[in-house]
Image (cartoon, rainbow over all chains, first blue to last red; front, side, top):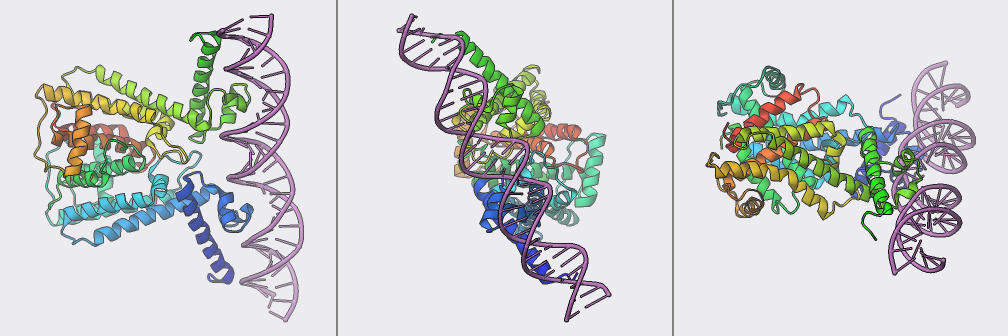
Length: 230
Length: 230
DNA sequence: TGAAAGCAAGAGCAGTGCTCTCGTTCCGGA
DNA sequence: TCCGGAACGAGAGCACTGCTCTTGCTTTCA
């Protein structure tokens, strides 16, 4: 079969269109995505969708993968727009881009960083795509370490098992960074997503009335905590 | 109507039983709770449940409220078991109790700290119950501040709006604590729930293989970051 | 004691994910 | 060029969902 036969091209377009409409439904109705409603919007019958996605969960998986990649790409672009040696500014751009994307696509954010869909088990592909964002952080740390710009800290050594975990992460993400610094960076990473999740999921209501400003303040503090100069 | 008439008592018992079975279904099937399945387990017909909860969302609200209170009570007990002047140990007990409760009741944790249910709007009651846990943190900070045991920090001042937000939180939670310290404590709080959410929602798979140990290490670091002695 | 309120059951409505069948259209190898 | 198989959309149907309404029965209270 030729890869760009009419059938194949129509199929690819159809798949994209289904995902596009599904995303729209996701944005308006939330996570309980209705296949039939998507099919209606397409002027099709629900069973026709099963030609493109074997089940509703597979459609969700596709959306999750797209979301991870959208967020990852967004973060990469935001960081690339900042001078390579402005390490703290790069971190801040990374954090801000994550928050901005989450606010712009709250339901897609919920899909990937919220409660997992009940019966749903995330396939390995999504795990791989999920690494993309944290890899951006790794790049900043690695560059800062290679430039000798990364402040060190005298935190106590982690216990053995955690040291091994850290070592494994370090090898993948930022091999030039000291474990103690990486531990702080991971803490900042968790802080970033904790802050965004609190805001997106409504935990900050009646508490933090200016979340953008508060977020910026906290993320600048995290930059200092990591040891990024700037 | 007498408050403890047979009717009223049976009604209260029935309400509790419905919630209990609903919790069990929540634990096994996840967030898409089926009223009919709950009714079946009770040997009732689905419409009978509507005598006790006007809608499925109201049942969810009741479960959410119970979950907030269960977590809050759990945190209070855990902290009370540690000497009042062992501030860092109290913080660690608080953090650990939150994580333990979340691991023991992942779906209830997801209900309150995960993606909000689509059409569902959390009533004010739940917001009030949600404060209970963070109030425990406030108590630790307040006691430490009053004992003069809280290290200060020279973080930059927050912008005006954030300063106002911090001031409002401070007045409610821990009035004796310096704003800059409170900012760090809130950061630690976000870090705590970020870490737990990452673990419960499967974001740490194939990355952190010993989450309990890693969590402890990070939370001890947060205690130092806040400035708690010990 | 009798009216009123609370209760469970059942039927029914509109909606869901998913399966199966049936006629049509397309496409690659002969 | 033609033909068999694959892909496709439509439709009916199944078991399920939340929720409403009606119908009798029981408890409660004046």
